[in-house]
Image 1 (cartoon, rainbow, N blue to C red):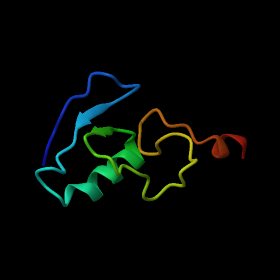
Image 2: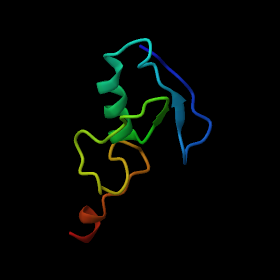
Image 3: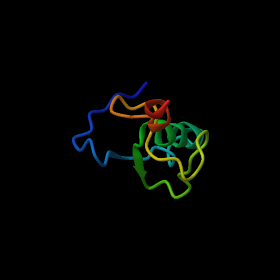
Amino acid sequence: MIKVTLSDRDKPVIDSVTSIFKAAELFECEIFDLFGVRFDGFEGLRRLFMPEDWPGFPLRKDYVDNDMITR
């Protein structure tokens, strides 16, 4: 387990560990997709679960699902 504190809530960025642990690619893509954390040094960062055009990051506490509001 790795625990970090990110100072910029609007643009969270941390160094990638994929150069050390190749298997971290999947986990870093998942964290980016669901929380919006970007990883410096990881060129293949992409969404895994959500569509590429999905607005926001659904597991963040400040995420608002606009579809749920209009229902």
